[in-house]
Length: 404
Image: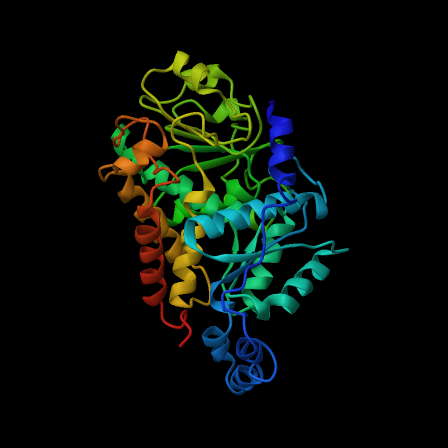
């Protein structure tokens, strides 16, 4: 069976979709019914009306996340519309539940404007303990997240931005260690200055990077450009004769691609510094295939977004556990400090011995920290404890960010 038919059958049978709602309480007797609904349900209603914090005690709010999209940037497919994005949002919900035990309602919003989308999310927010924004195009995704963070007292997280940033930061931390380099001293070039690229660069700067050049379809982001937005303007470099990707690649230590297939020519890899690091993260086809990259340089460390190559930069390593930690701590926001804690915990976990269960899940006989293992595997059961614990602790250390 080919992949197309297998994917359609998977989503259609034995019943359509990937989600269902199950009761967490018994409803088998008259007494159960009187507690689940009227008259018993009136008691927690009054308690929540008296103190809204009781919603965390008497409802599933504290373990319920909304995965919300407008369908304007669906995977690598572009603007597919809200309804067509539903399989992806259901898939996200499956990962939340499987990896972190978090319940999800997927919500696809047909909004006539950015303002309407924001108001929709604000109006439904009381239901949830957190909001995961998904597959929303740049640059309006930046404004949506910023306004929702300001108006809501629950975590708001745009995974395409910040989830990617956390995984890239963790993987790069380890890649630099393997190559004997320091974040504060390396030259980093980004190809792609959308939501993911800008957020990755911003987080790396917070963690100590000092030399980052961003490149998009129009060339190098410098301060002479008049087309920059608020989330890219602070990443612009001083104007110079370097205007293209080819201009800035000589001597670069790190290339991070969040752009398009085959956008990084092998000749550009030749002019990078010794022991280069290449993260070609375009999906499903990377900016350069590992086979082509290794044919040019035998001293590089490489990662992609694909599971069939080593070092997959996979957001599933981040968002379930980041939210788990935030929900457990009753955090009001997911802060920079919480994201850095997640990245550092991921990097540290990679250096620990790999459990036999992980090897079995991936049909491996051995796996250890090195060029082909710079980031944990998604089915590593230790991720919950390590990442969620680090995130929750970071939240609790920030005054005013935890609900009492």
